[in-house]
Amino acid sequence: MKKTLLTLSAVAALIFSSCGSSSSVQKTGSAYTPPNNQKVESMGIGPVIVSESNFYYSGLFYMDNFNPVLTSCATGMTMPIARENAFQTLLDKYTAEVPTMNNPVFVQLRGFTQPFTNTSGITQNRLVVSYVTTLTQNTECPEGGNIVGTYVSYLPNQQDAQNKVVFTILPNHQFTCAIYNLASQTDLYLTNGTWQLTTNQALALFFETENPYLSHNAVINYANTTINWVLNNGTQIEVVRESK
Image 1 (cartoon, one colour):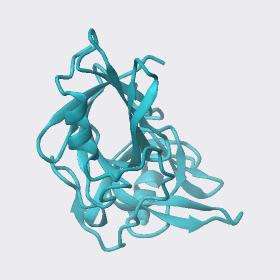
Image 2: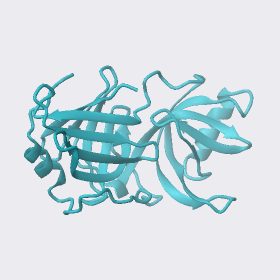
Image 3: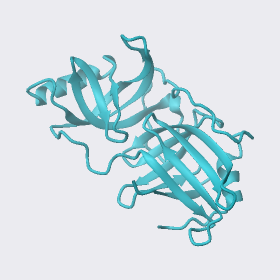
């Protein structure tokens, strides 16, 4: 496991300086919904403005009782797809490749989520497709692509650990981040927010208690299951995924 050289005070100052003084995790709502006319691809390193961004999605697309859905490779969750924007392009590509409408295919696309109320009266997010980048007849996601889980780092290092940073990615596109004191088993700080993929290997993190529309970035290394958190001032924090 690689070691982080940052002290607890540095982590707290760099990550949480503008997150308020609350010591408990606040509940988060749905991510901000971008307008339908957005055009920007969020692909670069640096802050991402959520209202101007088309995010990266990959997964298995299929028709569930004639309802279009995507099962995300990153989360394993299935979300409905809106029949607007570039949906018809996606459907045309799908019907050209698949003999029966129920068979899943692997897709990579750009888009954003928006809340809607389903036929059962439940409000949930659906995916609005801006454009399709890849559609193949693969019926499974690439192995190891699910990023949901808990990632940790020890401060000042694992051998002399005094504090533990715990970063948890949730399947509903939310995350929590906490700093624990190992000796007292107490929480030193907890915060939360929402996340989106900007590429297959990059996350945008939006802190609810900071500016929820301007992100920090994190780079995913699937080979050694680490996330390298890149703060907007250039500082990097590496967290390592805990074994399942």
